[in-house]
Image (cartoon, rainbow, N blue to C red; front, top):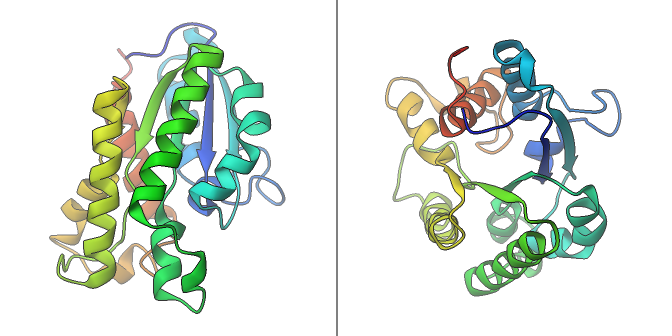
Length: 211
């Protein structure tokens, strides 16, 4: 377990992180953030961790940049967990292709945001892969998602961050079950899909058991 007593853990990202945290499921949302918090606290109550969710529905990395000072740096995290990129890709496959974020811009913007957060707060980073709940790697949106996830993996190595392989986690369950079991639109998971994500985060944090 890599989290330490009294630390502040801030999650930031898009709707997968938001998950109702600003309305009916305040303040943690009803998704993977809430599951991670509940399970870590249950297994390690002695740590007295502080948890913050700053996900916002629909965000791309451009939107994240616009609110970074207020919602990331000002929160003074000890750990900053970032999951962004799904909308950057998905917009290309909807009626808003002009709002898609090219991979070079995605990488450059995300690198700059991470650098600023570390410089300002000294936080450690947890970087989660964008994902698509689709087993066919030749599907165009899945192929794009794999490219953006590779960017996150490179940035995790560059910043000595904890890397959460969300796509690999879904690939494991998709090997034995249909995508509709986990999400209706391949993007927004049902609760069991959020549990798949939570398991991936718990593994990465070394918090899978109460030891």
